[in-house]
Length: 179
Image (cartoon, rainbow, N blue to C red; front, side, top):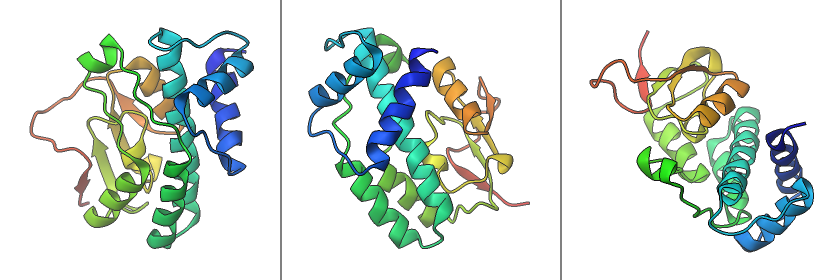
């Protein structure tokens, strides 16, 4: 079983049980115990741990958003989830080059609410990352663009159609398209 298949579910279980990590050091210690390998700061595996935490949180947040039509209740639950995560600040040359910046989950939900995104909306997300801005969407109605292969794979795991390159510079992030 790959490290991804071990770590993301372990973090999902951790957060679903209402647990928290006060620091990234605690999260790395947890990851080291799951992976049975040390996780030193500033290493590729440290970035992998950050990405795994984010992916687990997006999966949980998506479930919260899909299960509850009350957007205010969803927002409150996402704030709680956000407050239980450690600060994810590891940057790699790839994340810098690709300008990969994560949207906090409560803000992502709020943005979708303000724009009017629902599970019925047709959405093109040109900078999808791990899917935070797609929490309230139906994957059948979304085309996501993501250049990073690992993030694109995560989006596919969530059921999204993923493209690897922008087709037009005239498209806007999280654009709601009317049918």
